[in-house]
Image: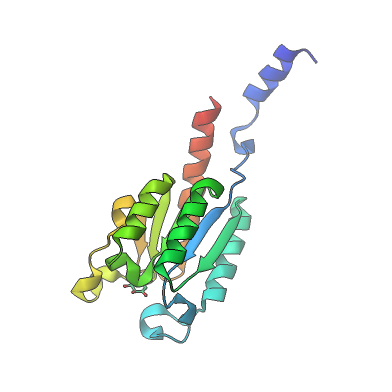
Length: 173
Ligand code: DHK
């Protein structure tokens, strides 16, 4: 087929067939989230982090996305992972847990990553103790979801799928 014919077919392809980005979405979880299921279930629910990981894998597969799901109790490790994501991921979902309210270093790492970032909290931090009402991380976040339990992670994936698709389409035209 002539090159002009190929170009015509490429431009006329259905919009749904746009490929989603190949780089995974990095999902990071901060301190004490390894204890989910046992830790204050009246606040954080009965699901374990492994349950949340499984829900994210299922949702990501349905959306045609790959994920890289991790947890650490250490601020420096989370920062190293954010720096790694800068090159290797298409976006970041982060529940920074207690570091939300303390860490300028996480804010700086997320800002430097120059990626779409969704901040997720299982609980509604605004309904809790005053020291939880402020988030350093939110300044670097594209969006923030809190108070919806593990559903927040799935909603973050939905939002990023749409956003990444529109970024890909913008690059494509
Ligand atoms: C989890 C934590 O561990 C707390 O330190 C935050 C967040 C809230 C959550 O709701 O997921 O304050």
